[in-house]
Amino acid sequence: MKKLFYWVFSATLVCGVGMLTSCTDSNSDNPVDPPRQRVIKFDGVDNARDMGGLVMQDGRTVRFDMLVRSGKLTKATDADVAILQNQYHLSDVFDFRFDLEMTEAPDRVISGVTYTNVPTMPQAVIQAQAEFGAGSGQLSTPGMVDVLLKYAFDPKAQELAKQLYPMIVTDPQAQANYGKFLRGVLAAKGGALWHCSEGKDRCGWGSALLLAALGASRQVIVEDFDMSNQSYAEQVEVLSAQVRDKDGGAAAVAFIQAMVGVSTVNFEAALDLIDKTYGSMDQYLEKQLGFSKEEQTQLRAKYLTAAK
Image 1 (spheres, rainbow, N blue to C red):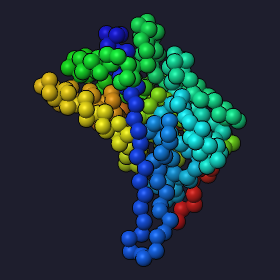
Image 2 (image 1 turned 135 degrees about the vertical axis):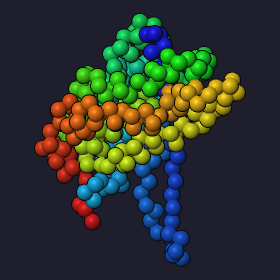
Image 3 (image 1 turned 135 degrees about the horizontal axis):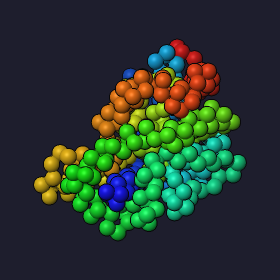
Image 4 (image 1 turned 60 degrees about the vertical axis):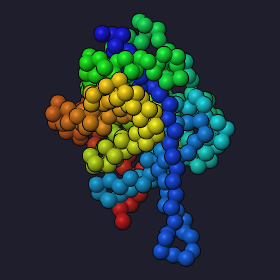
């Protein structure tokens, strides 16, 4: 069971590339400045996006150039670093990975930036990883595709994939470190960036909790979480097609979606679990993460524009 557990986790560490789009005013003869795009096109950092532009329930909007979510910074290029320094004035990086992940793929060190490790995987998965001594689990790793395809058909692995998010949101260490992350973002002197390995699951939950603290609706939180599927759509489709070729049903395909992309269905189920177990997201932020109403008010004053 522990080995299955580890592979479910490790299969989430796959590569993805975001897309950047732009638009113009089609009703004018003259081009206008395109609206700001949230997806950031880095050369060596996957699944990156600016949290700016998201509208909160009180009508205020998240400021651009202050908050970034992404995959790990291991392969960040000089051009990527220049963007983070010059456009985002990056001062703080929050890394949700555990020790072995950071050792195998350390972040690029950026001058003047404070790095804070806030591991948020449940301890059971970390222990299983240490016990079996497996690598990072990326699709480029020999045999990883075969492993994914094998466990896609295993009912136990399918169930473990469904339980990954509930385990994250109910794990005491994860709760403590997500609270530390929120307080760190509040205290950041410049731009803040947070990531896990590929910026989708643990990073996705960090983003969800930050958005909740900023006053986002559930719809906005879910839509931001689901955007990671744009980055990994090609990989998901390739492996899903292979599952179907092997006569895999909906559960096997859902396993691939959850492990290679993100499962919005599982995410929403975990949001429901928060409401059921802790009363509401507001109660979860205050009591489980220790992020007070006063701190939430300060966070909103710092990162939100005035309502129109």
